[in-house]
Length: 86
Image 1 (cartoon, one colour):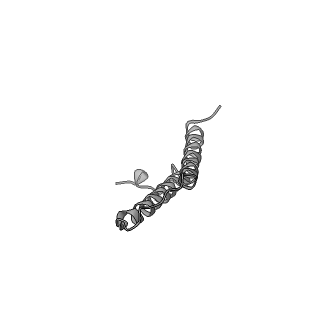
Image 2 (cartoon, helix red, strand yellow):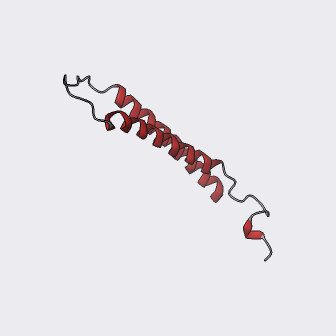
Image 3 (spheres, rainbow, N blue to C red):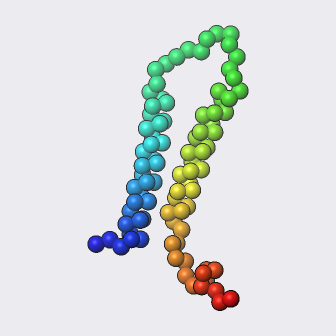
């Protein structure tokens, strides 16, 4: 029988794996998309370059944040503010 903390950590591991799988599926779909040619003599918009870069950066920031939350101690000990005498 799992305790609440163990069950929560198992769910968190599953969510991290799900986020990684979603990222891999997105990369696969981007690489496997049908080829297309840009029309000649048309300038690329400024956001055409930066939008995918921002998307990838946001993905890695979110994944890093999830791992940071997962690795944190849920109850770090008596040194926390909850246990201080006022």
